[in-house]
Length: 563
Image (tube, helix red, strand yellow):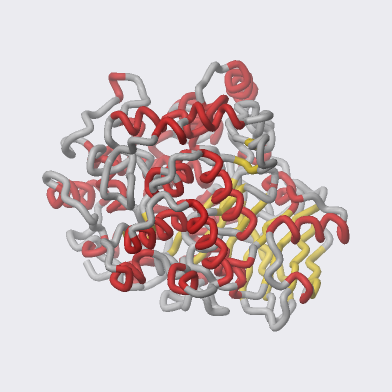
């Protein structure tokens, strides 16, 4: 089986130390990326850790496919305990960072401790340097990137940066790379900010050799030649269809479609797109550099989920207003989905839907924890009672789009996800719209036959996050090709993916998570039966905990949940 190579580099930012250790045995089983980060976190982070305390650890890792020249491989993974969900969580980002990370020669970098001073950590194949940067306190992402380029000669594609939101421990703060690409969901930016780390840079010329099969060039060629709607509109290509089938959350989830959709459709985004955008080595080029000529506003996006949160869910029907919110979140360092939904909750409480000026003001106040922003920075789960609105979150994470009240399998997958209400954990929605071939599709309504497929998709996505392979490769990398690329049987890969999901679940079990957390703020027919079937397929206990025997298969020495 192909796997990433190189030692683990552990950086204690409080002690200003960096040490390396061989982890070949783990790499041979856990590929890289999310699987590697999850295994290391399960072994090395205390189960009772404070997510914003010095004992929490952040893991950055690439996978074997970052050693290819294939499309869909410009991504890397980050793992830690989330201050938003209070559980173990992985997030990944696109852009151009991953190849610069592999240049350091490390398979993973672990950040622990807490610095007394605001610092930038510079990681190279020659070692680690700590640079005190007090003048960058509450600097924006773009200001920080400009400083690093001026002082170090390293472009934005070498950086992981937190904005003011991360320093101020906003629970849904992002870590940003390439200025506008985000380790978005779950608040890992607040974890890095709590360690008093403003940025990390990666640079070197010591990439370890991993031989990738020649099929990579076939996939790359197909990606370059494909006539695909995402090349023009990114993920917003689904907007009008989601609205038509009533799967587009609007007005803080009170409605399932939006009458002003024309003003924020994929067509409107495409009209603002002024050049192609891509990630490292990718010929698919689905990114969305956009510009409003009248105002001069430039940003990247908005993608569909951002459009949902700051558009229909906030009652906004002007794409430029959504673009401005997107730009603010990127530069201040916040997850657009959680931020947008939290703003929408406030708008609902104040009957201010559609007030774009207020929305932009709230985004800034959240990042700096000023006034009402200090409350909103805690996220919907912690503040919904104060606002007098419903709690639209799962496990503390705000909902993405592709509404489960219409797409019932996606709804169940929101509930089962260890990460919370995130559509990419299982990515079931393409099977219900459907965006897949008819023979693979499911009816939108009900849960019949869906739990086993959710398990399979969660497992294969864990492998993609470990390889690391973009989820939008789904039309180009099927089961056979994934097996060929990683030199492993598909069933063996699914087993590894399942092991990753169970390790995440077990860690969260030790923090008090169980069946009672696998819930939704709405009803789905036969939901409890579907959850029972999901647990049965997983081999978990009826209460949503991981049994001893299953955990032992992962090679973990930690005390398991009771059988």
